[in-house]
Length: 122
Image (cartoon, rainbow, N blue to C red; front, side, top):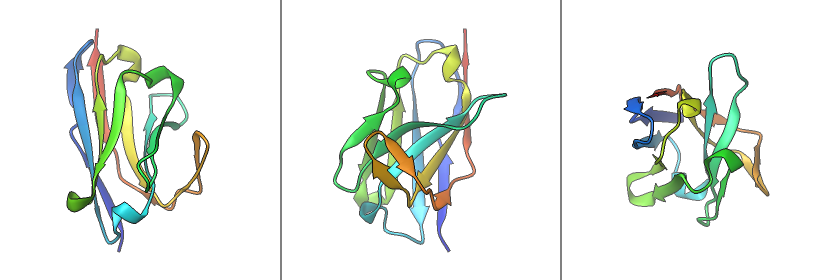
């Protein structure tokens, strides 16, 4: 059974940093593209970042220069380093795998984590 488990969310002041982790079981993460999505209150879920199996990365414009997605294949984990956080980054962040990377998009997600809440105060 495939499971993705996010951790690292919490409350942070604007301008601060958090690092989210997504640990996978039931699949070898190195063979898949991983992605982070987020869903703010009252908003649709949006793609934040992707890392391909080859290590190529993609970011939504609103987080470019502030967020970095990375992976540690030995730990079967994908990370999202979030710097210079803004109140508008407040959302539940979801890890995803099993999708198809097409340019800056990620389609057909097969596996989702249950999310970790990030709250950025002003």
